[in-house]
Picture 1 (cartoon, one colour):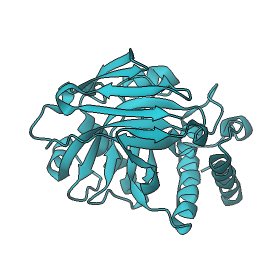
Picture 2: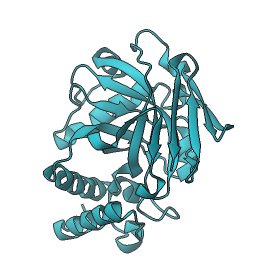
Picture 3: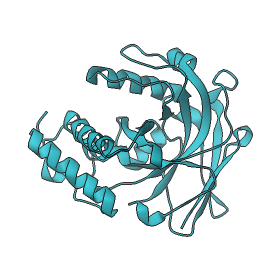
Picture 4: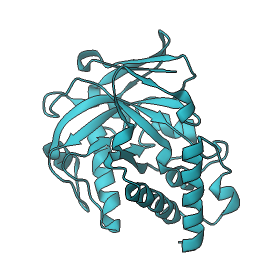
Length: 262
């Protein structure tokens, strides 16, 4: 790692303050050009641990930048991950305060709810399918506290992988009951289709992203626990939203997920 523990703690505090104030800060890499991916995950862990100490509870993890659509949209080609807290998990139909987030965008995803723990190294797609209780359609609300222009994977990871909230659909399917590669969605804003995508866009199969995460956590002595929700990554480009917008994602046989921004 290139950053000192003091610098890591200072950046984590800055990001926590930006989260509370719904603000945007200067890119970390503009100020610390030598910062590494390991530094960024250390920043994220400090921020996470302070949130846990304040009483928040982890609901699961999010995986980002797993599809060509998202990599093309951000200019970043390496997947990343962040944590999701219980107070950020919303049900379909939720009214969401736009002002509670920064650089607000929506992504279309599948969420895996684990029945059994998953750990790497060596976790495979088959392991994920066996450990999953069910899969649900979900939307992710992106919440970026760092300037978007010129950002790198280091900036994004430090900012908890730009996670803000998730909106969960009601249709639960067993992973063996549907070919998850072919789950498709139509993403609309105010009645107009803006994005479409197929879940195979996430590393060929959305469960591959979950296996990637379990293996990525292993060197840090971490793993995925039973009951955790894992957002596997978007298979559409992020869609910008504004106050007053109604968002609907139609997953066909897997139902509809919707929310509105107030």
